[in-house]
Image 1 (cartoon, one colour):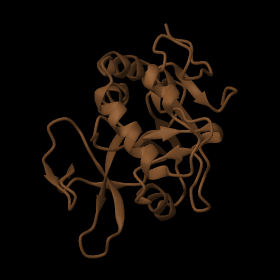
Image 2: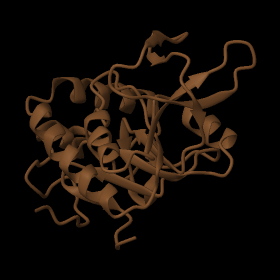
Image 3: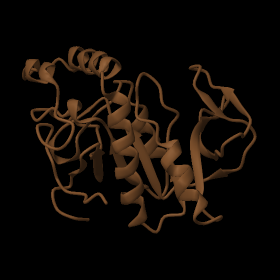
Length: 213
């Protein structure tokens, strides 16, 4: 049994590896992003961290009453949420899992139902998306983090996709960031247009907020 508690990157079963201490306070988010992406791709224990985070996510989802969850197709070493979500969906046939689909002409973003074995096609960026499945509005949104800071701050890829997506989703879903503990950057500062996450999970448990929600 896993107890979800607030942790830091220097505690828990997967301590941040030695290169974490080389991160220095800087306003250069592009350099920080490149370093964290390179570290994530080369984590020697990434599979073990991913298995632990699968369990953390499953336990956390058990405390929610959502039936519609939006997520992402993992790229560049991101944590894969789909195995945990599929197990979550098996408990209730009304539960839906969705991946983002951007309409080619209108550029409107919607979430379309995903399930194992559904037909997929690549989007404009070469990322797989469901083909011709139903659209729905998620009440819970899982978001990958390149890095994360205190107060629910997220470091993404720098393109503003997450913030534009949140602006389009009405009502705004509850947001959950997912990352490995090496990505914790205590001095990370938010840009004016960036929205804070409601919850952040890593392989050690809930790292934001610092008290149960």
